[in-house]
Length: 125
Image (cartoon, rainbow, N blue to C red; front, side, top):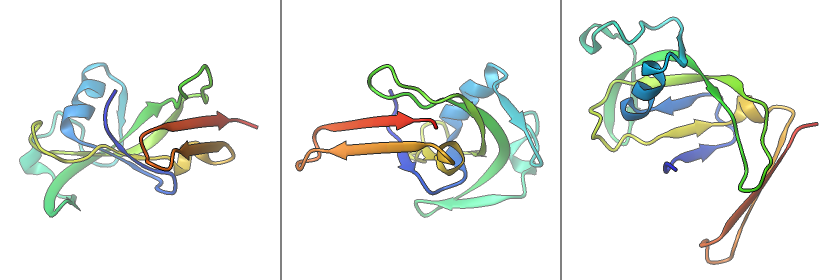
């Protein structure tokens, strides 16, 4: 399991290189307008700012399936992803933008008062 920032209102995921590289190796990224991974980082012109650093990125679509801690899951959907060109050891966070995935669906998250225990339930209409 990976640590990630979950943003239920964000329409795009941000995938650091340590994450998207694995998807790319398996052929699970459909590259869009920005160049695919075969183009060197030096040739990229789009940049994003995260945690005070500026990173070039590629745009792609990755297939994402949300599952809860029980046996609930939502149908997989391809989501927009900014794939940052950062050092694989960097601290660039994995950001899961769930707006596209949750459109017309529901996610209920409950946390204990201390924040130590979490539970989530997902539903499709």
